[in-house]
Amino acid sequence: MYRFLLLFLLIPLLSLSGQELHLSDSLGTEGEILTVLTGNEKWYLSIETDGIVEIRILYRENVELKRWEIREEPESDGISRQETYYYKGTLREFMEWDDADRLTAEILYDSKGIFLEQRLYLYSETGSLTGINVLDKEGNLLRNSDLRYREIGALREISGSDADGEFRGNVAWRTSDYRNLFLEDLYIRDRNRTYRYGYKDGNVISRRTYQDDLETEKTVYTYHADGYLEKEVTWDNERNTMMLHYYDSAGNILVENFYDNGILSSSLTRTYEEGRMIRQQERGAGIRVLWTYEYRDDEDEPWLSRSFRNGELIKEIIRDDSAVREILYRNGQVVYERITGQNEPEEEQ
Image: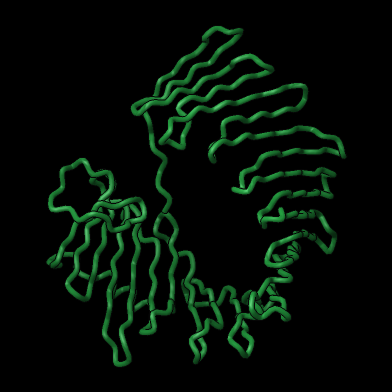
């Protein structure tokens, strides 16, 4: 396994032919071909290849963010492929595929490039994934998962164990419904804690958590006639609390109520318009906090946000293309004001 990785890391990164430049996005999608860089591209992708090695580099504002190095080697029975992924110059993942384009090995690294774990994927003669072995740096087994199938080829069960053979969990599908393969029960054990999920018609309807064989938490899910999750109730038996959520058809939380010892302690309600939240109100301990949001037609982020406490304006946030203005109020008077630049969040790795 490591000989492939070492070979891959030693690939010379120069003299590759066939370079192309494309407009792109944060995922590295190939967009419009660029004939020349103007310096104003937010995202662009460089692709270089010599027919065996391909190097794809994603730039954000002319600074390298992500790099993929892909090598395809002809073999007697096909072509194998290895891919190495870097984020901000740090090695994050190595993957290897066989001639049938099945992922056979994977090595994961943390944000500093330090080895995390190695995964080996096992397949049957018919090509079905039958097992996943997770190894440490020395090649010792940490844990594994086994997959079993019905005669018709449908997945029937997944189970897992650790290096000592201790059972870690099990997933079973309803045997009476071969066409839809709906889950019926999911059982996961993690040391002294156990999680059990119940399903009906493909939807999870309950989740129970046990510790030392005692139920500590229970969640029940209710679905609308149209199929979307409408209500979720969670009981914490240890703290004697309950959390209630109501959802709309888009999955947005409309109501969030928290009960302590059977008494409503706090309530959060949200109002949406065309998929965007325009109002949020929280009530609890005699305090009512209201947020309102205003949007421009083509934007999902509000340009104006206001916060009220018991009906009194306490905060405004005003956004434009170049700055964010934050204003705090007390007794109707401005007591603090700050203007900052528009800083975009860091892209996910």
